[in-house]
Image 1 (cartoon, protein in one colour):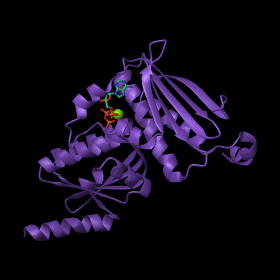
Image 2: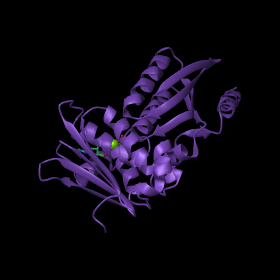
Image 3: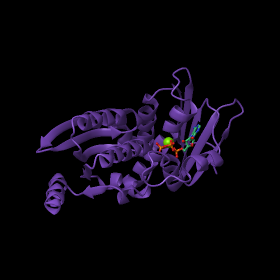
Image 4: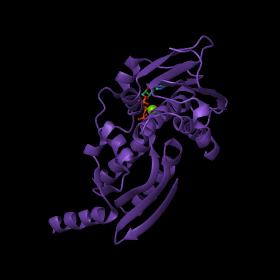
Length: 155
Length: 118
Ligand SMILES: Nc1ncnc2c1ncn2[C@@H]1O[C@H](COP(=O)(O)OP(=O)(O)OP(=O)(O)O)[C@@H](O)[C@H]1O
Ligand SMILES: [Mg+2]
């Protein structure tokens, strides 16, 4: 896999509910550069919003003093998104304990299920500097910016 | 998220507009709490203009459905864009919500239920 993305964004955000909308707007713009159809674009936006929402809510516990780190890298065959929060993270056992027995009327526990369904690969874990990172990979075909100069101008 | 409400008889028709996520769900939940405090337990949510929903929005809808059910009321959904409907399907929620093509169909479902109980 080639190392350098065709397009990328890397962003530090203060932890607030606004992170969900800001990161979605960025992702939406990047997705215009890919070959995904509208349905797939939408599903990916929802999946990423789940990860960001979890970072804001569970990871950073809605604490406005905490930060969130978002990055989006578009390669010619894939898109990679990573979200880091300043929380402790989680493991599968905790999620199983919380939602394993939850029925269809549960008011939560759907976010990660959507992520698993939509992403081609998901990885979670602590970073060297103690943040919790969730990264998602989705295979797409993307074009270099020269080829889409027209659509960039009209964006 | 913009929310507009109109009453058709004793049914509250609530038109949602924009994003239904963690931030905006709270407004919707607040409105339905007020309605139920006034004993309005029959509702239609028209999602025509909802362009984004994620699990926070879905969880809020389930929570409202539970509230309404506990008061023996009704919550009907209508006019979901195909990609919004798909999120309901991925999360298996299309089995617990009644989802109608449009507002008229949702409204007539109330007439049918009322006739049945007569
Ligand atoms: N970034 C995170 N930091 C800490 N815990 C997390 C994080 N992401 C997820 N979790 C844990 O995993 C659980 C499951 O997440 P998931 O998104 O599936 O459900 P939820 O957020 O509880 O509800 P929903 O997403 O349906 O509104 C969470 O309740 C939380 O305990
Ligand atoms: Mg979640």
